Image (cartoon, protein in one colour):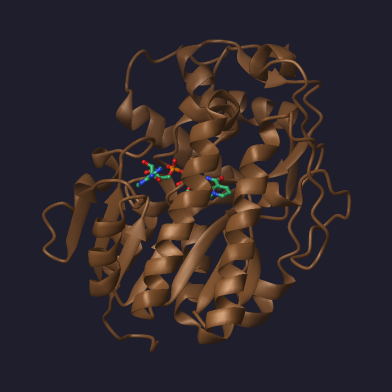
Length: 336
Ligand SMILES: NC(=O)c1ccc[n+]([C@@H]2O[C@H](COP(=O)([O-])OP(=O)(O)OC[C@H]3O[C@@H](n4cnc5c(N)ncnc54)[C@H](O)[C@@H]3O)[C@@H](O)[C@H]2O)c1
């Protein structure tokens, strides 16, 4: 694939949070984009800005529909597979749907990409590192999952199966596949409905409600701006040397959930308080969480020179601005 060459992309899950930003980028770059999305967690509003562009087309349907996927993959030059059941809450609440969506849809995409010889980028997740303590996480490190009676691990295991299958297609059939393990990605258009922490806390702060922080709030995460993540995805899609490889993509600056909540309260001028709540109340008994999760991004940096350029302040500012734009009232009084 040559930089500057105009191509047709199939983006599954392209009406979702990350997918819609990737579509904006690809259209800006002069490419043609086909989206296949069932709108289960995505929405047409996310791609409303592209609807009048004659290089953009959105098919509402499921990635488990062989016939539709076959036709779209045949037309595409490159496939980016982002469609998935995403979010801890959604996975804990609907584990059957999560496992079936994440495993079966990836099977369908890889099978059709293979039969038409199309390069594929598969979105995986930092969740696959599970309970590993080998920080920062390296792509060649061991994965450490929890027991199968804890639904939380279903997301990680289903994505790990996707990775194994992708690597099997690469080794056995020579299908050009790149796997990207995304860490916490945040920005405009992400919704808090499925357990995503930043939009949830921002929504609570703007509504003047208590900010709910799980556990003791000392668990740490690294948040990467979606605009940075899109740059990494694009760089890896264009680079043939990425094929047959797994890459971590994420920010490396850590913050605790308590400090995150405090930063959001300060950024919104909210008078909300922070309310600690147990994991059991949020997700049911037996929920396991990890205290820290940091990516080692040496590999992606060495190949395409990528590292995040936006700070947590940028992330919070853009998420707050987005929430205010889609839900302008009620405005809360400033402190002091
Ligand atoms: N946001 C993050 O922090 C994060 C972190 C790690 C990995 N990821 C991965 O990135 C990808 C995109 O996630 P996102 O954050 O944009 O979530 P999202 O929920 O906004 O996007 C997923 C999209 O897939 C669509 N979809 C789900 N099942 C489908 C099906 N069967 N057929 C067609 N479309 C379907 C949804 O409607 C949605 O538009 C996912 O594969 C996810 O696992 C995201």
